[in-house]
Figure 1 (cartoon, helix red, strand yellow):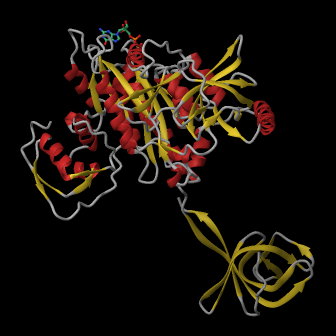
Figure 2: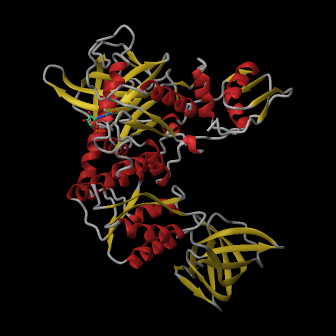
Figure 3: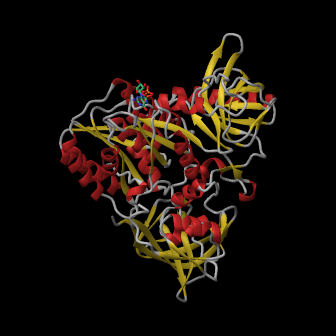
Length: 596
Ligand code: GDP
């Protein structure tokens, strides 16, 4: 891209941030970070660089440079959706947060080389001094590249990634999408993209098998663009790195780019607190008992810490890294094998350190009890209705859908119609669409992203059916497009915030005011028109001022409680939280009626 650019001029101040420089040149900050890397400078997006450095980078990127007197204005532009940073670290004071290594997962179509690539990365980057050291498979490993750490999750595939999310955990910060350059975008490539997007995790494409004679990177880039992944060199934001896991080429470049994306995401955690994180693997070891690989996501895990993992408890009796070495502590983004648990936890379970073992045991017991109770009740419902409730409560602004149809050809018209439904406040968001039966991975995605699955002329795989039933995922099957669209439309309409209008139901004139022990002030009224009903809404205006707006709390005829008193009768009226009746007040009775 740089070559194609005419030599545009930029004015560079004495000092500016990487972001500001990128803005000046109207290029992605990633390109600037990479260019700096090539010049041996490891900078993050907010780092200040001086004129000299900036000028070198800019010249190399095809710009003419001139010094500029006043400093450039900085702007906060979120370049990449920042993953669930907020969720784990919410409540942390910004000044307590420190940078942490990225956690990376490998996604892609079967046989495109995920496993090979993970192995190559692991073995070519053994931490210095450990050359030849055997790393054990513990579900994750950490390596160092250019003096910076990167954590890789060792179980490739979006199924594992989404299964973890379905359990409420988000392990990865960055997804490497492995695409074989000779095979291109395949159904699982598309699925992986959708799953990563649903999780708001940035994607770096590793274009693998570049050693093959029939590798066709340009074709793959076009295919990626067709499914909405715009490659950086084509003006998009997705980095695409050609590699060959077999020939071990491009690996450094891939790792450089992971670091660049990580810098942009500004991943942080507070190392100075008790640890919390996610279970990556659990195992029952004959000699060591229950063990688990834990990924610390916030805080620091230490030897002796008391652990609560869902409804299990334990104490960290020993901790090992992926090389089998004992460690005494694990900081954010570090995976460790932990010994000393009461039972084997599941991948995706979340853990936290609590005060002491006794507390851990008590909390675990309580959770186990709750779980048992929940098991007797019907499955947790993720039905359309429940999701609509959440939307109504303002917690959700999108209706997430997963759409499967028998053939590609029918998907497009359905998507077109669905996307026209909804409005500004409430959108239809199609997380994933594809041809074929509803699979377990679809069901998992639905759980993880609170989505409804819609099938058109397709069946539900037995495994998907089991997951959906257990988790209460709503699967709706149709064979007539019109019915499908209509159903979703009606659902959306039903949940659009209803508009209410006030309808006046009567007026009552206050003729006397009484004090009744334990009840308070009661107005003796004459119902001038309409009627007064118990629980009816009521308001009082005086001199053009609203002095009360609330609800009828008591209604009596003589000493009897009554439901309703009609026009022309007298009665006693109490208003919720009001005692300042004055003779001559007019109480207006009204109700709210739904307009739409
Ligand atoms: P996964 O299913 O995505 O984990 O794919 P694997 O890592 O198991 O690789 C599938 C096949 O592709 C294996 O036979 C690998 O040896 C082969 N493979 C992986 N990477 C490369 C590569 O860069 N070049 C070539 N020629 N073959 C590769």
